[in-house]
Amino acid sequence: MSEIRILPLGSGSTGNCFYLEIGKYRILVDLGIGYRRVRDTLLKYGRDLESVDAIFLTHGHYDHVKAALPVTNHVSCKVYADSSVMYSIRNIRSERSVIEIGKRFEALEGLYVTAFAVPHDFVRTCGYVFEWMDKKLVYVTDCGQMNENILSMIQGADVLIVESNHDVDMLKNGPYPYPLQKRILSKFGHMSNDQCADTIEAAYRNGTKNFLLAHVSLNNNTFETALQTSLEKMEGKDVRIYVCHDQGDGMIEF
Image 1 (cartoon, rainbow, N blue to C red):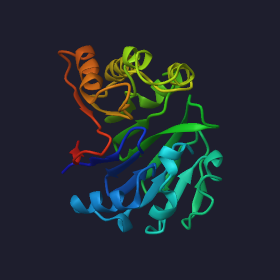
Image 2: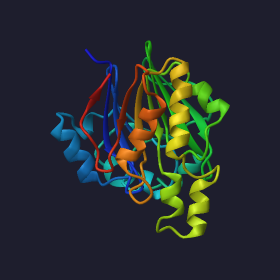
Image 3: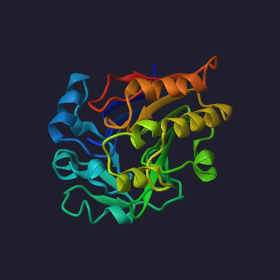
Image 4: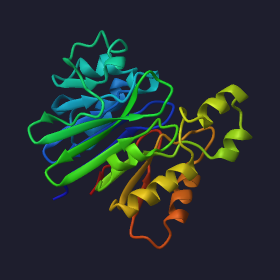
């Protein structure tokens, strides 16, 4: 029986939301897509929104929190986030629980969570480490650049969900104005396909073999390019690499 299941509900600038099953727990990370899409996609795979045990938010940008109110109207679980996000979700009915970056805590019985700082142009942005018994899943998107602290958090993960946002040449020659290009390429923007592939290679050296490429740009990338960049970097290695589409994918089991 698989102890980790992942259902990408939405990934990219149109909205981000992941459904995770770790052991006996059901979790949502980010709420950046519509309530109906969350509800209907979960039902399609035999799950229901009301059974979600916890929700975790990475930061307060609209494509990560825009559905916080309607989604949380249908759950009774806590919503965990850094204090910088709380104003963005001030109207939700669910109990809000402030996390401390860098501090490991027991969110649910036996499920330990650590939020870690991620360089991005929100007040504070975080990634998450989820640990259940001997299983470890790490989620890191909206990351301008990789650093040693994040790599240390990834070490030993069974599964890594990581950003592969843009192809640099496509971005520089694409429709975005220069200031927006500069923002995306900055250390507080988003990781490129090449940066993602380098991260995967580093994580593989520390024991990770399962990867999901997330937050792929629809304007400055393609799903095929993102996937191929990482596959080429890891050619001949014993890895599983998936790419998450903007409208979500089927359930992935590990």
